[in-house]
Length: 507
Ligand SMILES: Cc1cc2nc3c(=O)[nH]c(=O)nc-3n(C[C@H](O)[C@H](O)[C@H](O)COP(=O)(O)O)c2cc1C
Ligand SMILES: Nc1ncnc2c1ncn2[C@@H]1O[C@H](COP(=O)(O)OP(=O)(O)OP(=O)(O)O)[C@@H](O)[C@H]1O
Ligand SMILES: [Mg+2]
Image 1: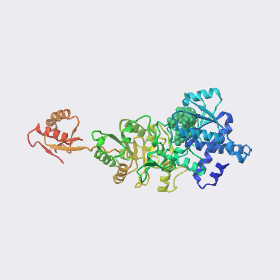
Image 2: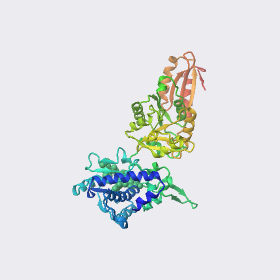
Image 3: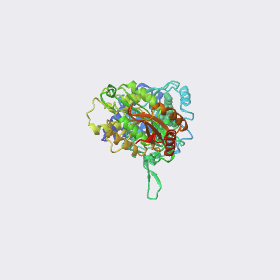
Image 4: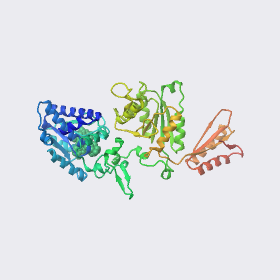
């Protein structure tokens, strides 16, 4: 069997392990259900193409388990499995023809369905007993969250077992398999498509784009995409989220379109030591300054305990009301390092092993991790993006609009911040910066209060506030906003209401 042979003969141990696990799930499926009760959900995409060949290999091994030795001469025709294809006019013609071509080559028993997934499956199950459906779902797919290798269909769907043999395969594993086994895949993947939906929502992945000497735009093949997490970058998002406000502005260096807008951020420090008063948080202060300098408004800064629920509660509250949330502290392998788990809980997803991150950690700390898995490589499933920058030993972790900072002091933060700002798709859009002016006076609070309150009504676009450095010292009135002229006007209006010299500029 050529697939089994190609994998056994390759030197990629990781691929061999993935193959072994996936074919084990397939063998068990053939052992649990009768051949006629199993269907393969195939659509010509790369993941289902991988599954097709794993199915062929798994079926071959299953027969071997039972003492049947298949004829080596016609291994292509051996696994004539029921194959369901939901055909729509919105599919790419290349995908459609590839699906039919492979079905023909491998003698798949095609059952074409022309309705949507749910009603199509309802009709199918009424007509034919179908107990298990094999899918090419992988962790990271939006619909994979919460699924296992064997997952019953969801409530409200007709009853069947969803079997996901390649659930734990990464983008890299998929391409390692297709290239190692030298099997045919849909031609769109050589044209820069990395994950294929409908003709209406899929374009080649911009991360594979390059310009040739004639200035024409071209795309590298899908297997050259280095960060598999971005395989869906060629897919249009169906539902805009609050996160999109930040992400759709592509280059952080441009302030033109954003000059009047302000984006908001919250900062969460995680640390019992800060709450015990043993350790002073300097990073929060520094982050406030940095965000302010790029025109962002910090709406909240908090310190929470090293406790999953405390972190989750705080993240959940902040992420829904802010464009971005920064969290630091509570990261690492210690029992008290629960920040990442808290973020996962806030989004209602579980932690899953992230192979790309694990590899970075292995480079950094070697194989000194406990047990089979490096606990630090467990990241929130399906929502995590790694933000790479060569200057950093490990990438920054971004879960939707929550950025997990790994820095432990202000110097490290400076480095992470610079990296964040220079990322090609930085989530930190640089807005028009804030300006400020401060006036000091020896007037009492009571004397100034009423005039300042009226000024706030007259200048709603300017933040006007006051503070004292000491009870006996001067009162300082601050004017903060994005329009220097308005700030000057507000400051002059205040001075004008009092005798000359009552207010002086304070720097
Ligand atoms: C055979 C099959 C079974 C499915 N079973 C379920 C299910 O049990 N629950 C569910 O919510 N969605 C189910 N779906 C829908 C998928 O989760 C998902 O919405 C679909 O694959 C579309 O993915 P896309 O939006 O990325 O194209 C099923 C789809 C297929 C093809
Ligand atoms: N139209 C369809 N008909 C049958 N099965 C489908 C269809 N669309 C999706 N599926 C099933 O859902 C799985 C996941 O779909 P998904 O689009 O993520 O993967 P893919 O199409 O195989 O590869 P790619 O991610 O490159 O598009 C597929 O592998 C297949 O099993
Ligand atoms: Mg697809």
